Length: 160
Image (cartoon, rainbow, N blue to C red):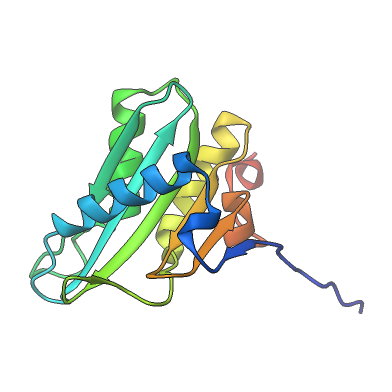
């Protein structure tokens, strides 16, 4: 037996003033989308904003349902809409922000497993990195590739 170390290097910013204007714009759009979430059960509003290669920004918010788990996460709402509207355009970045009681949460929220799998699938399909921005009230984490979110992932290559 041998052991293998899996590690991920991410950029952690302690203030949004350290981020580029493009990243801050994406975060603001995610915050605005989160305020429109339908989250009457959890009270946990999540917004996502997708920056496409063509410069378009598509947003989405979580949509809950009393017949849990038939709702959708903000990340998948935004990504699915982006790929439905612009199927041939690569996704450059995704920003995710969570809001509780009307305030952006302190600690950045990370995508669930289903969202991670979807992000990896699109990253593989487009053949270029899909960067993920997780923004909290102060701290922001920038992950260079969605594949860093799910090491040892299962993808289309395993189906060949």
